[in-house]
Length: 619
Image 1: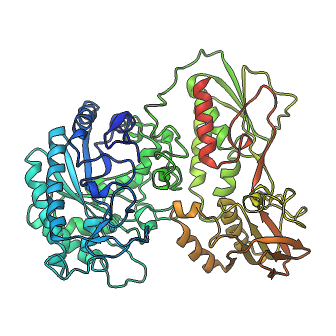
Image 2: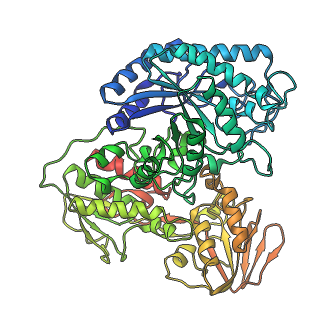
Image 3: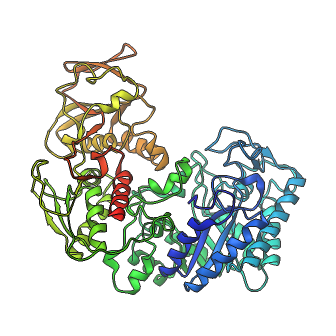
C-alpha cells in the first residue's frame, strides 16, 4: 500500500487505513509485507527491523483490538525483487536476477544466512511486544524465502541448496525461531505460493513440491495455519489476478492443501462477492478467506453484509490500476472506485449539509457519477443530466469491449446507489453551457472530445495532427457505435491505453471486419498501463489468438489515402479503413460551473473519481 510514514514507522495514514477496515468487520486485518532486515528496504513499508516501529505498532494493535478485530503482519524479505539503489545489493540464494530488475543479486553467504535468521527472531519479538495476534512467514512468490524453495533460483551446492530438504533448511530455521519468539499468545502462519508458474518451466516449483514443503512445517508443529496464493514475479497475472481471472480460482487447490495438511487454510485470489467467499467456507475449501483489493475498494465490506446491505458494497473491478500506485512509484495505493482508500486520515468523511441545498451534475461518466454519489451522501438534493441513453461514459465503452466486463459492475453500483440516495437522473438530456439548470452548485463532468493530442508526445511539431488523418474516424466513435468500419482495418495507436486495447478486440470480434492491424510506437499496444495492470503478456496472447497483428515501433508520418507512411520510411497498407486512437482534448467548461474529470484534463478513471471526491468534499 505504501502508506507508512516514510521513515519505516506506522504513521497516521496507515493507522487510519487499518483501523477503518477493522471497524468494517474484518476478523483480522493484515499489514502489508514488511521487511525484517535492512537489506530489504523497498518502498514505503513498516520496518520490522527497527525498534522505533514498536510504539506506533503498539498503538495500531490497540485500536484494531478496540474495533473488534485482530492484527497480523507478513514477515518479509524481497530477495532479488529489489534494486541496489538505496539499500545495497539485493540478497538471494544464488546470483539469479528477478523478472523486475536486471541486476544480479548477491548470493548470500553463510554469515548472511545467520544474520537473516536472527533478524526474523528480532522482528517477531517486536511484533509480540506490540501486541500483534499473528505473524506470517513470507515464502510465497520469488521473494527471498520463496527463492530458496525453487531450484530455478536456488542453485547452491551447500546445505541450503539441491534437494527439497536442503532448500527447506533455511525456511525451517526461520520458522523455528519465529515460533520460539511468538510464544503461546501469538499465532504463526506461513504464506506460500501453490506454484511459481515460471513461463517455460514445466518441471519447476509447483503444487506437489509446495505441498511437501508445507507438510514439513506442519509436521514439526512450526505453523498454526497456511495461507495460499499462487504465481511469482515471473507470472504477475497469477500473483495479482486481472479482471479476466476466474472468480475464487484457487479454491480447489486450497481444498487439496486443507485435506492433506490438517491445519487451517487461508486462501486469497479473485474473491470479489459475498457468495464467492461463503461458498469457499461452506464447501470446505478453506477455513479463512483473505481479501485485499476488495477491502481497498470498500473498508466496510463485511459490515455491510452483516447489516443486510450487500448491494451497497463498493465493487473491486480487478483493474490493478490505482492499487498499484505504490509499485509504480506514483504514491500510496488507492482505488479508482473508492479514491478515499488509503487517504482516510487526510480525507475523513465531510460533514452533511442542510437538506435544502441543491446541486446539478452534468455528465454521467465516472466523474459525474462519483460527484453525484458523494454529494447526495452529504445531503445535497442532486439532479444528474446525461446526454446519452445510458450512464457510464468512457468506462461503459471500455467495459462493453471483450474481456472488460467487470468494469460494468462499477457502473451498476453507481446507478443503484444514486437510486437509493434519491438522485434524479435524466438521460438523453443535453445541457448547454449557456443555459445551465438552476441550482446552488453545478458540477460539469462532460468528459473530452477525440483528438490527436497523443501525437504530440513524440511529435509536438504536428500541431494539426498526422498529415492526411484529419477526416479519419476515431476509435471512441467506433466503440460507441457512431461509426462502423469493415474489411481490413488499421488502428493508429498513439495514446497507449485502454482505448486501443478495447478497440482492437472489439473490431476483432466483429464479423464485418476481416483483419485488424495495430501500428504502435511501443513494443506492445497500451503500454505502459498494461505493465502496471500486469496484463501485457495476457493481452498479447489474446491478440495472437484473435489474429490481431501488431506493428511495433511504428510511428506514422502521414496517411496517404488507404495506406500509411512510417517515419522509418516503410509503408503499411492498403486498408479498407483506418481508425485513430490518438487521445482526447477537454471540452469547454462554462463560466460558473465546477469542473471535474476529463473536461479538466483527460487522465483516466482514477483522475475522474479523485476529482469528484476532492471537489464534493470541499463544498
